[in-house]
Amino acid sequence: MEEVIKNKFEKPLGIIRRENGKLVARDAFGVKLGYYDRRLNATIEASGEIFAKGNALSALIFRNAA
Image (cartoon, rainbow, N blue to C red):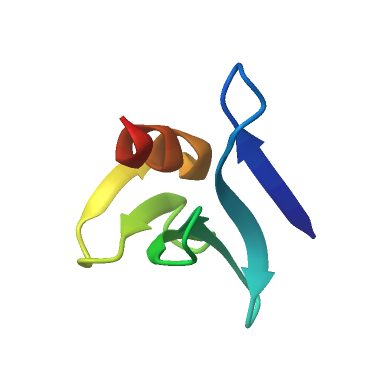
């Protein structure tokens, strides 16, 4: 699975892909922003902090792009 997240002008902001069984969000430069932990049902930032409950990887990409 791979999903490119774009802004309203179709500019790629980041990507969500499955890596080693986890959904991982990366910015447009390939820098890891965080991942979704299905066991915890939480989105975890690259720093290790919980960003949100549930899968909020696209929100993490949009927040980073702002």
